[in-house]
Each structure stands twice: as structure tokens, then as C-alpha cells.
Image (cartoon, rainbow, N blue to C red; front, side, top):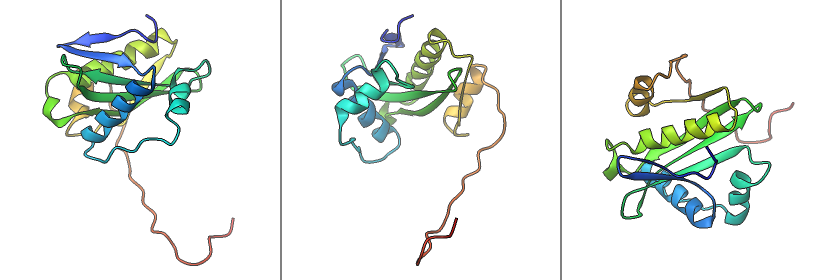
Length: 159
């Protein structure tokens, strides 16, 4: 299956980011899904090249409702040429529970397989994505620990 193939599930169409508009839609849906402000990169054309060019190590996807509204986003980054890390899977709140996340997950898994990746993995929120990925056969390998560092005043630490 080609990298630029479109996938469809439950009336939702998933498209691999391939131009500035699909990147904008990916970023907008991600921001809405995570209840954040949209932050556009300074150079959108460069960001598109990073996920579509000949040396791209990542792929971005956007899910569209039948009316063309972006309703979800998700990405995958290739590590060591064999492992795909799935990240930033998000669904716009009004579209949750309607198969958007599942469609995005399927698109990323099919893309990974078609690009020769052996495995994919992700951090899954217990209340949202964990039940979905568990139901699709993903296995749990432990909790994620969040680390925070309080900024220090004064001079930076010595190395």
C-alpha cells in the first residue's frame, strides 16, 4: 500500500499529510483534540518536506468528516529503521466515540507495515486511547513516568 493512500472507516477519511493544507488540518485537529491553541511552525513548507521528502523519518495523518472538516490527527516517527513510535493521536471532542482514533491508528499501522517496520508502540492514556489499543491487540509494557524539573535561578549547573 502506498504512503499517500487514503483510508476510510465509518465515514471518516484518513489522509497522509502531503501539502501545507493537510499539515494545517493535522495541527488544527491535534490542537482541538488536546484542548490547546494551534501552534503553526514558522516554515510550513519545511515541515511538509520533513514528513514527505525522500529522507522523511515520520508521517502525519489527518482524519476528515464526510463534510471535509478535520476531526482527528495522528503521527508516527521511525526509529532505527524498524520501529514506529505513534504519537499525537487526537480526536476533536465532538467526534469522540465515532471511530476516528481507530481509523487513524489503522492508517498508521498500515503505513508502518508498508514501510517495512517490524513493530509500533505508543504511550496510551488510561482513560482514552488505552482501551482502544488494548482491544486491537496492543500489549501493555508498563506505566509512563512523568518527570518535571523546577527551573533554577542563577547560573546553569556545571557539566
